[in-house]
Image (cartoon, rainbow, N blue to C red):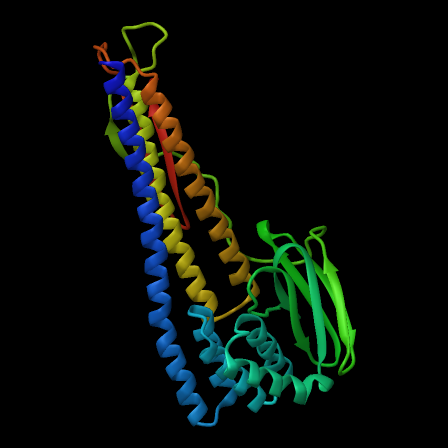
Length: 331
């Protein structure tokens, strides 16, 4: 095969693989965003219904869920008002602080924030947390619902509380805070210890044999000594597709875990979601590496006549909580 033609074929295959990966990622992101918006609307409506019924705490939780799914000033303002109506002043002040930070140009949001903070800041404790890296916070073992960041400001009731920063990779750091109304407590959290236990499931190593084989894909030998077999290129392309499909499955599984956390924000569910998100990111990165490797295999492969093919199989085996991919045969 002409070298220029071979280069074009390999480059087109590589671009096609990356395009599919990019389009798949964009489609997943767009789908998740659309689904979030669709779920946020009924959550907001249920918050309104609870507000009309005089159930301020329930209304606040529904408004907070709507804001997590599709952040809007209306949802956060409603959550702040309902927390205040329920007498839950620390969370009301925390939402007021969030309104100031997220919507500084929105007059209704800044006015409500000032009203709440001016009226109640002397009865709550302001906590300012600085993390060594982006972290999410737990207060007394429960998620605060603040976005991952290096700095956080929130409010707690008077007395003693435990603040825990959870970093990427599951590492965490906890610190006791205590203060009286109207005071500010500042602390810094470093990634130096693990002080949270969780029952979140972990991916297990596959044992035994079996699985669904995609069948033989061709030869791994070449008539020209020292040249790479084109079937290595084919194998890399198949593995790239398999890894990409697994990454899509993992992304959907991560979205399901997020839905469960939204319904019940527990610590095990939170840590489980972090594990699934990390797994998805690694799979997406692995797909990109495989696609790049496939390009180079194609560029240096011998596309001439080949000897009788050896058998090569790609195995994909779904299992509880994970998908196992492998390749076997004679190379």
